[in-house]
Amino acid sequence: MILFMLFTGLVKVNAQPAAEIEKANKSCKAVFLVAYSTAGADADKAFTMANDAKKNLKSSSVVVKMNITDAANTALVSKYRLAGAPLPLVLVLDKNGTPSGGLELKDVTAEKLVDLVPTPKTSELIKALADGKSVYLVIYKDAMPSQKDIMNNCATACSKMDNKSVIVKVSLDDKKETKLFQTLKCDVNAKEAVTYVINSAGQVTGTHAGLTDVNTLVSSAKKAPASSCCPGGAKASDCK
Image (cartoon, rainbow, N blue to C red; front, side):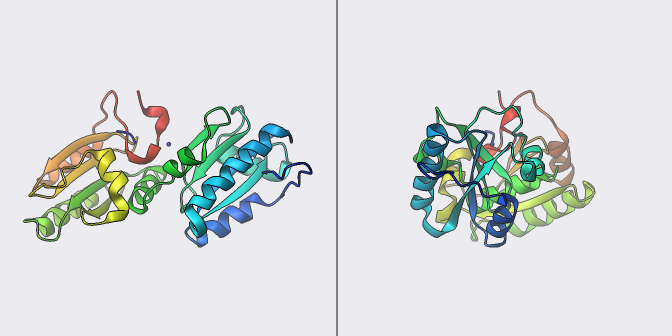
């Protein structure tokens, strides 16, 4: 499952996209980063699409334009691996500043851009993967049996992984996570909590219903299957 700017006419280049992205991160806002190299109609169209997506999300996102040929943006170009990318490109950064996907001009629409903005819990997942950690994604309801024991076992597994893994806990009652549940194909009528183990490559390596022993959780996190993808688009290059 895996899950990864211009004004019409006169174009003004903002030489501080890094500062804008940092400001958005501090405000927990998603960023539509419009990367381009040449001002013109194509760049204008990409900028317009990004702004249309922003309107759909209202105050929870910002649009940042960046000319990759500007020396001031060299660090960002390297960080987001934009050298050689088809331009213009709209890259979606989640509230942590981590890329969750991107679209080149021929594919971009406002709707597709909005769909690339991860849910809050998916954002946590993507951030963990970007930090090189595996994830124990626990889907639960408060009334489910063994929920606390499951969390304790996941915490012990994290310890055995030398803290190279994290726990992301998601309630099935959380309406903000509908897209994540659909991606995972969760059974909304499940009677037990389910732990999805996602390795550091962004691959789902285990799905465990109910209480699972610590050693199984650890071995699942270290497993690397031939193909599989994590939710939200992270590590998209690993998907097949």
